[in-house]
Length: 382
Image 1 (cartoon, rainbow, N blue to C red):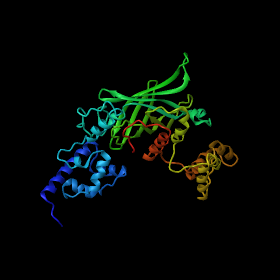
Image 2: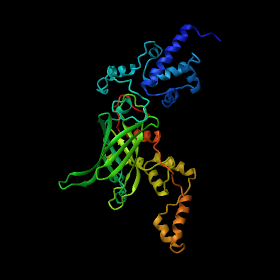
Image 3: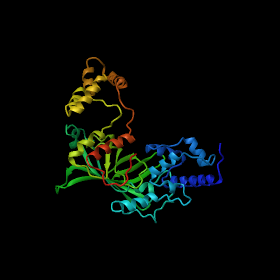
Image 4: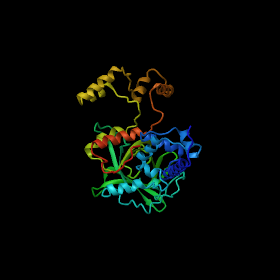
C-alpha cells in the first residue's frame, strides 16, 4: 500500500479540524454527525471508520462523504479542506443570493457561535438552538368537551388559539391564548390565557412548554426538536397533557395540537383535523367509511379495491354503556368491572401515542400542497 505523504497528512489534519468546527456550529457530536448526514438522504460513513479518522488512527476519508457534508451544510469542498475553513460560508451565500427574503436579523459578525451547547436544559433565548422557535404559532386542537366533538364537521370541533414564545431575560416565556368560542358581555371572544416557560432538551430532541392558568390549572406542551439550519420552525404536531374543559367533568386528558407559523384557512381545517387524532401506523376504519373514501374519486376507489383484496380484519366497535346494559341479565354487578377489564385485554388498544418525524412530515406535506410554508429559503425537512 502506498505510504501517506506528509502533505496528505496535513490535509487530513485540516479536514479533521474543519469537521470538528462544523460539528460545533451545528451542535452535533461524532456519532450524531454521521446519523444526521444519513437523515438528509446523503451517503454517510460507517461510524467506527469515521471515529478512527477523527481520532487520528487513520488519515484516509471517503471523498463521497465529504461531498455529502458539503451538500447538507451548504459549503464548498474547497472550503471544507482549506486551512482557512469558513463554516459560515452558507450564511454568506444565502445573504448574497436571497438577501431580499432571508431573515433580516441574521448578523454574521455578531452571531454567538461560542454559546455552550452541552447544556442538558436550554432556556436562554440567545441559544442558537432556541432562536428558531421564538415566534408566534397558530394552534389547533380538538375540543375536550364531548358534546362539541359530536358534530360530523370536524372543523367545528376544532379549538384555535395562539402560542407565543418570546425572550424574557435569560429565559424564554410562553403564552397560550385559547379561543373558548364564548363571548363576553361586549360580544368579544373570551380567551383562556396560560403562561409559563419553555425548555429545550437537546439530548432527547424535544421542546417543553410548562404553562399554568391563573385560576389554577396546568398545561404541558411537548413537540419534536430537530436541526433547523436558517429558517424559523414552520409547523409541528405537539402532545398536550391538560385537563378537560367540560365544567362539571374536569378530568386529566391527553390530546394533540398542531402548531403553525401561518394561520390555517377555515376551509383547510378539515385537512389538518385527521392528524390531530391520536393516530398510529395501524389505521382502523369501518366498511362504510372506507366506501365513502372510495367514492371521492376513481383513483381513491382503485386504491380501496386493492386494500380490500388484502383481506383486512373485521373489527367490532362496542360502546361500554351497551356492555353494561347487556351484562345486567348475565353478570352480577360486582363482576362487571372484571369482565370489562378482560374485554379490554383482548381489544386492540395502543399503549402510548407517539408523534414521529413521519407524522410531522405528512401534515406539512399536505399543507404545502395547499400553498402553505412557501416563504422560507431553507427549511427543516426532519
